[in-house]
Length: 281
Image (cartoon, rainbow, N blue to C red; front, side):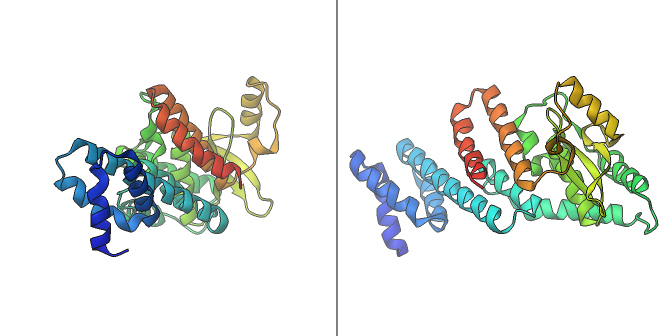
């Protein structure tokens, strides 16, 4: 559609006839993300609250449709890239974020660790180095004061505030580690997401890492004891590395809980749609 045709269509957004508006809205939504700059320009020049609200809703629907498409494509082609999946979820709340900032921050963390990394370091020494750079120097820590804050689930906010929940901290930890070929993966432990250093030959954990507690080392017996306290058996899904799809599901569930606590049922129901997409994998 030509720009002049789009502008003519957008000019009808303040039409009181709901049938006309519904037709215009649907047409604009099918145009996709390329229409957003013109909608934003119209919003800025408009003094009509009804038109502005309608434009905001249309932009959000277009962006949400794009998130759903991106998530489905990620599952099909790119689910080995955890960061890419997390950034898709990030776009739900922050659609205009410059994602290069996140990539640059993680690259800088990787570089700071790489400068001290020796080829003959054993697994414990590598984890000690990760802990020193990520927790002592960079300052990552658990957000104990606002544990259920939705911001804990958005990676750029965690890097910005340096505070997160067990899941987001473990994700950053494992992403940075893997950029250095250090085999640290996420463990979908009930009630408390952690990480593990993986024996690459056996593909099983050598030991576990409680990232929320500044990289505390946990033994297998610690995990079994924790599960016993929860009256749960040591099933493989609790003690072996989980998939990136499982991680994104848990991020979304955390967000659903956070929005529930804030009383924002609209966002809770909307983001549940993303969970359903992942459940259909």
